Length: 108
Image 1: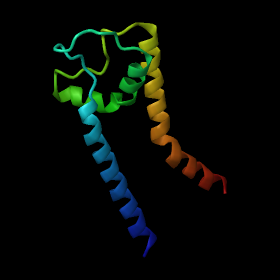
Image 2: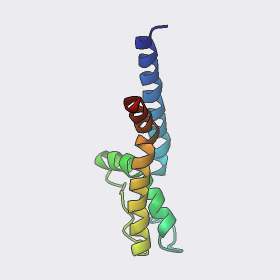
Image 3: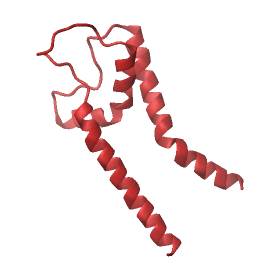
Image 4: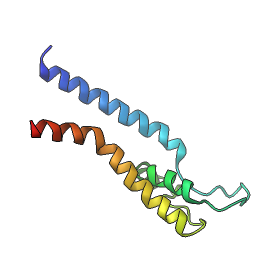
């Protein structure tokens, strides 16, 4: 099999994985549920989760006014820190393996 076909297959497989992951994560869009009681304000861990799903939630929020990317009723600095940490963590995970592989090829 030629390398051109393999690259195309990898690209198609990657696109399917990304689209499938986006589809799965759309059910996890961050927004307040007005019907639920306010047992406790979102803290650090929910901030991390909202930061991780922020890119997908942002895309959904462009088409749906009921979806927000940031929980306004949070417990303060810990939620904010978790949100930013989640965004950075998500960006690191997204570029990690492919970026490391490209760098190792350049160094050879």
